[in-house]
Length: 252
Length: 323
Ligand SMILES: Nc1ncnc2c1ncn2[C@@H]1O[C@H](COP(=O)(O)OP(=O)(O)O)[C@@H](O)[C@H]1O
Ligand SMILES: [Mg+2]
Image 1 (cartoon, rainbow over the protein chains, first blue to last red):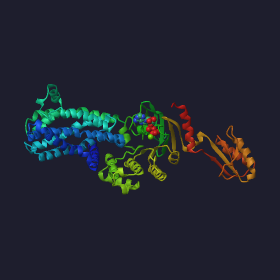
Image 2: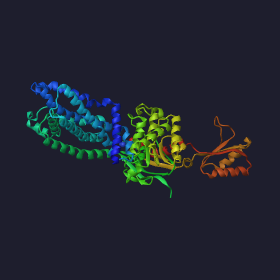
Image 3: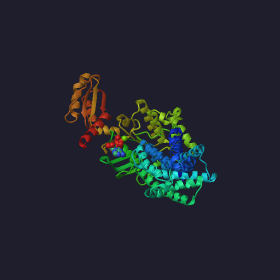
Image 4: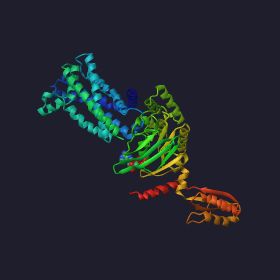
């Protein structure tokens, strides 16, 4: 139980830091908006057969997923910097669970993933995006997005523990996130792709996530995609939480 | 049995090619200050990190407050406060927020954590800066906040890694006051330092380390005596008796040395000094001068400065150690 209260106190610490440096939220506010604008108006005509509105309806759920995956990168960078600065030495000398500093930082990231969802939905609506399902499915889409963000970011936490500098965290994470998000169903329908790429898209965890969010926001099948997504989320936790905790314990 | 609050035996730790700790033994009695003195790279920080459960040694055992550091680090963490060599305050948090966070992590109820924070900030003269982010603090203020953070939970054992490095002399004396007050409260303090006067001023016992080895462990005075280089200085009431004094002192001189009149510029004339090696020299000289009827107005055994002790000890080890 004390793990939770300690993590809560440490999450609050992260939130105070975020509030003091709002520019650290650019990657979950302004950046997704710019991407959404760019892709809608740059490719919308070509890819969407001239129907920009139809393409926006297709694109927004996908870009939401992409922004979530990218939004986790900063977490690993911040943790890496904190450890390098010695801030975590103090926490390590306190009688708290070894997991608490990491869990606390991850919990605080809820704010960032919520921000991605709200900013994209609000701005998308201004651009003409419409939720075609209803209020509850939309809420479910946001909840799933935040949940996925919280699972996916453990990769970033782990990388933050094993590489030396926070710059390297970014390098490694983008090398992972860019192929995952572009090599998916985010920007184009999978059946337009060559076979080998389709194969990659099919096994990519971003794909079922995007399919689920699409179903929840603009309609379409949800249940099967949701199941695969939840399995992926559980898998990410099972693999990367222990990896991250072990790497943290080893890093002296 | 002695009540040892820190007891480490045979600590070894290697970083790549560097043997940071090469079989280090440490012992600190409860309610005392142990000064760990050594130059940069001696292994002080590594030793502190092992004792504070931040680092596992390759070999050796360590007990802090009676608890095995390797087997029960969590229990040790309940009893210690650590101020590392590099300030670990959170720069984006205010002074108050930094301390309240520590309090909450120590399971204090919110109100108690807040009260303790206010109390410490006041005590360290940081009340005016309490609401400002720590990144706006000067180096000395950060150091104090860092020290305050290690005292939030009233720890039984306090580790201070070079607490005054980089502080100006006035701030250093303030810090010494803090250390003494903690001992008065009943805590035991292990502090590392590169300043000899600091160890001399604060420590009940001093451990001198170099190249990951303990090269001396003694009281400040004992250390000075062991290294030798003591000088016996005598001033006869009648300056005419100086030749007699010289003769007496020659008889107790350290082998290969002779007594001499003090003629150094600035010193009041009329005294004679002689290097001695044994404590008995003082008693012998007194007895002999009484027998000869020499009246003495000043008689003192001068110990070498800790500075000299340090250089003698480390100088010797350093020439032996491979570079
Ligand atoms: N994490 C580390 N990795 C590699 N070498 C280290 C590490 N920590 C300390 N050392 C080396 O171990 C030796 C002792 O370091 P340290 O304990 O910091 O000494 P001190 O605190 O007395 O200056 C030094 O040579 C230092 O370079
Ligand atoms: Mg050091």
